[in-house]
Amino acid sequence: MQQRIQKIIAMMGIASRRKAEELILTGRVTVNGKIAVIGMKADLEKDHIKVDGKILTAINPKVYFAFYKPKGVITSLSDPEGRQTIKDFLKGIKYRVFPVGRLDYETEGLLLLTNDGDMANSLMHPSYKIPKIYLVKVKGNIQKPEIRKISSGIELEDGLTLPARVKVIEYSESNSWLEITIYEGRKRQIRRMFDAVGHPVLKLKRVAINGVFLGDLKAGQMRYLTEQEIRHLKEGRYEK
Image (cartoon, rainbow, N blue to C red; front, side, top):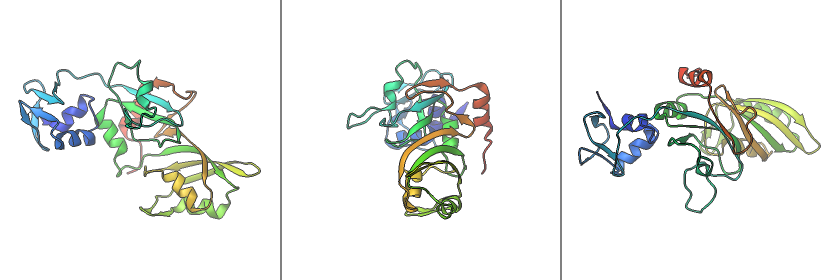
């Protein structure tokens, strides 16, 4: 059966569909010896499809992991500066998996890993409001007016943020612990939101993505998602 080349690459677990399009645009994909183009279709059983010169011959089983990314680790499979990446924690995994979205260098917590490009693409697509829950420690005792601003939306340099849910967990003498749920994934979004109200983030940890929770995982550990968690993600129980 013929399918678009980027979908085949995603099904094979090589990359997400968006990344597969980048591979095609940069000439790294060929079909029967010819450089592939966006929109081209092929049949995996009949055509010779190669990515970086390697032929695609079999579809790997789809796998899904919850990973506790430690602070000070790059959400990438390589880093030109030689910093530690999530690939350093994947040595026991026989499947080629990639991260669903990102956590910045200083942020720790839940990261989903998979070779299911279609699901990864849907979870990362900006048109879907995927709930992501974080624990955040900020400088100073944040007050209700600032919380209301963050809850209703903060104007950042790249536009107004979507409404968020914010709950105060604890006040200490000079800091505040909060739980925040956001529905988008801009770069360093939570840090910028709290900077905008004068309470810089001191610690940030993601604890849940769309019903999948970090649970008892320790930094650097991972586990397979349960069938229920996978079904939850695939059924798309989120707002659109």
